[in-house]
Image (cartoon, rainbow, N blue to C red; front, side):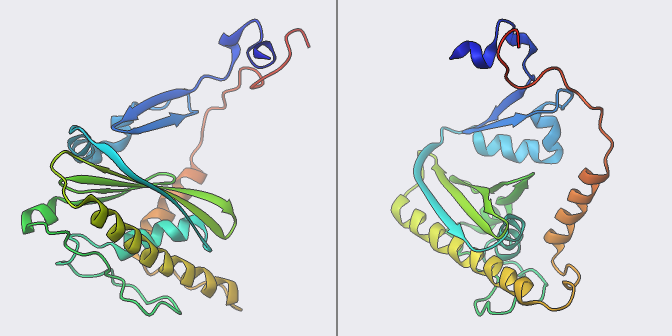
Length: 233
């Protein structure tokens, strides 16, 4: 079976760039892509600092929600406004049917300087991160349908983290609250008889600009051979 996919000349397969940061492995099919940390630019330092410690995986969950993956990511950033309990919630209209406040996160017992150092990241296209002093939350958004998203949730803590079970429960409840905003927005879109209103969330607007820039960018086409083929055929 190996010959079916590798053939006699595996060097002819499509090259794939692979890099890692902490517990995450990143794959890029662009042969001319920049190194991972260069791609992150200003995020490289806080991301590196968060992953430099000895993190251990303490919880993994899978939760599916009735909304598009972009709405799930938007709701995540809109609902979790740093510094996690002391700042102002996102200034955006409340989605229809969402009766809970957008500002949902607790302080997690952090001091004011620790809350200010916390970071929320949306790494294109589908990795959401919460960088905290003693733990990191990762959420991979997996589209399972046009209006369905499976969230693959992983919680990593360092050796100083305490009350891990309570921390895990709090995060899962918080993510459910965040997703409720995405689900409400999806229902609003589904029921709309007019074109969707203009984007009213700063993070959502930034992400839309990023997507448009990706769509309009010109690329050099690269194609060596099919991904797999029988040798000699």
